[in-house]
Length: 633
Image 1 (tube, rainbow, N blue to C red):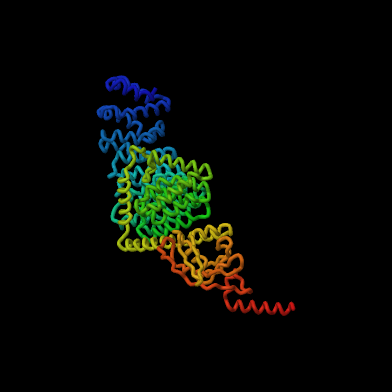
Image 2: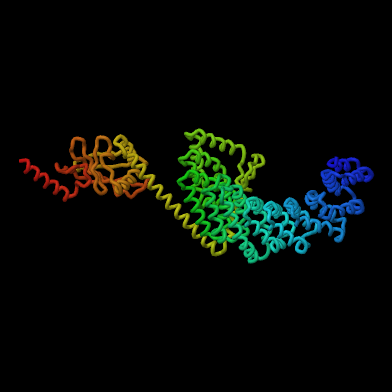
């Protein structure tokens, strides 16, 4: 019945409540059963905001004074549980002297021998602080709060940790930095798992309340919190308490606003790399987000570059497929917090290469990265990158593993009908999709912020690093092109059956031998430069001439020249092929008629031996032949 009185009073109206409901409530408060008294008191507190001020002052407050002395055991649990709500509802109707008994009752209950009573008082501390005001905190509640934070019971300390953010919010930044730094240090260094969990859940919000004062004052404040944060991380890392680790890493994402780049680089970055390697999947994802924020907001260009290259080396090129999966997660988070330019400087090429990973799970996960990559591309300077992404997308749509092809198909369909917003976690319908101009504006704003974070000296250092990266990319592209050409020639000359393919790429050669043994050569193919490339490759790594010549011919090469020997064994004409300095696609003038002398090979000389034209080799072979003939005779 007591539980229904509040609803009955609001339903029947104020006059009926005064005449009928309140007298009945007073009778229930004097009931001999403690459970009835507690229920009636809870109903009375709920009705306070409905009753007018004169009734609260004349009828309710005199009755409450009977229950305020802490030696009354009938409301030992109910009053501490409701005292915060009671004080907030009565504070505007009472003078300071009338309010003081309630305040004294709260302090007495907070020092009670019962652990449950102290825990209820700790939970009600924000409500009591709201009732008396932040200006009276130092005089009335600061000492009591320090006692609760250091209470012998872990449940009481956990209750203080749970309400810490509310207390800091009520006090304001200035009083928080003055009064709550020591309580926060005590809670972060607490050995109890429950206390640590309660304080870490709101740590990303709590740290913002201490960001006040000059930069030197903020540096001193957060510098004093650094050892406690590292100790809390050490406690969270033991015993595979991944939920604690997740709460801590969520706070790491806010660290660049409060700590210097050197402090983050030396203390928090190693923790992120550790969790990216050994944490469970939710922890790895949170660690990648924290590291992406660290890189993006770092004020030193050299540290940005060092962290970026380490991510690529250890994760994009990692031997474990889990490492490469973590790299893809990192790329998604990096695109959420940074500009496309910062991402493309180091991470774009490895991210695209992940679409060709030998492990199907990595390729399938990389397919989800495709919409983000396309948003990072700017035309027309990234046309080549876009073509490569489209080509790899087609490959994944036709992947041999059906799960990979299905994932690529889902991404392709989703990209057609909805826009995956690369700047947050939600999907926006196409009719409400953010425009391309808005995306570019946000990206440009981020790029300007990343540049302005750096000092003048660091901006100069950033320019040097960008120039170095551009030079390395050009060198890598040139080297890759050379290797591709060499592989093409090697594949064409790998078997005698394929030798005709190379001869066709040279063009049609018309040969007419007259009395002066003259030969005219014309290149009739636009692919004549491939033969020049072949000569370059063969000069660095000799290929047997019998594998390069057209079917039915064997070729004998010396420096820049080739003599063809007919199947009948007669010497053909020596054809000058040029120095081989021209590249494919370059303009090549028509070759003039070249005077060639017929050559008759020595019977001792082997036409297939590349060193046979050396006089010393011929002399040694002749000597061996004569000696063998003498021995046989």
